[in-house]
Image (tube, rainbow, N blue to C red; front, side, top):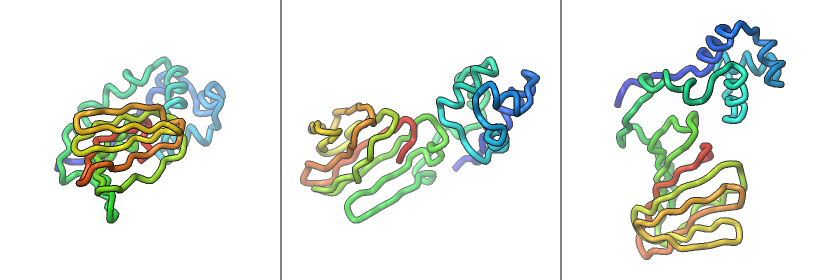
Length: 184
């Protein structure tokens, strides 16, 4: 396992704010946020939503790609099974294959379902979901729609409706599932 190099969004935001000659209060006023929230961001006490971060960066004359370009050399690039975090019930196993993904724009997991098992239904939320069936056969349920996907098939949907997957195979089904933004 590689050394974990923590990325500080807060200190980078602070540097960018100071470079623009703004106080926390001035930035907060322009972004229609509280000074306390800006302080919490800069001290890594809280994390902004993607929309809020984009708004702040726009006010500071930057973009997401520019802002995060300096992190590329510091962040862990390759993750091995030793890095994974796993949650297991009798019928469903979820593996977070990028364990720090909750801080990123997307969160990939591998979900393994025993025959007849289903994931818990997610309530509607902002975002999008992508899945690739690695093994077996699953039913993808999104709102009132339901379709079967077999090994080698993929699925993609907006997360604005109740959704889940269930195993339609006689054995284990395995799915690579990516949520953007992270919700798992």
